[in-house]
Length: 275
Image 1 (spheres, rainbow, N blue to C red):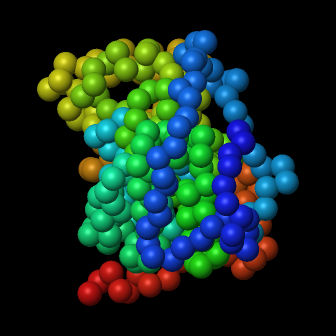
Image 2 (image 1 turned 30 degrees about the vertical axis):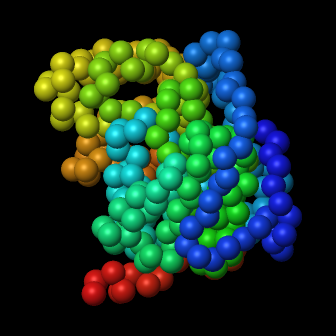
């Protein structure tokens, strides 16, 4: 997927260090889908020729508003930071609320968290014009020599998904409050993400969602691709999500690259979070 961007920075992107970026509103088309999408036919990560020294292995987290994306970002930061050097980028339309949430909950030292204000459709900033997010990720990697990078998209619909030029591993989060029909609705987020997370399973009985139906439909729509049923805020199944993510990191060749460079290493500055 091609994208246009400025070339002012040393790596071909404009860079800033103020802790936030603004992706200006821009016209973009809404892709007409000819089907629900295919897991087996999805775009695969771009690993051949990928320069891991420019940007570490990047995990993209997407999903509808309120599904638990930011909670998963927090959980992953807490699970990974003692062993891996990580940094995070969040996307909101007109605020920096998700970045502020991560900072307030001491997910990472504040300089390792960057906010993008998309100013328009959230999916455009992670799919069509990815320049602001790509610049933020490369900036963080260069500054902190990251082993892994996390990025969260703004809340969007089931048709939204990441560009493979931005995310090496895509996690799509839905939750049971939308009803057990959500997996069978399909769309790239459901069918073409590398991992589907069905969150807030403890609320299934309250909202009348049948987890068995969701599991059956997810398996069918994703052609057997991995789905994890979780309660992220209660740390249920987070370890399984982490293991799947790290397996993809190792398979990509990025782990080998990091070991050759002396990594992985713990996130620096964690002592500052104890104050």
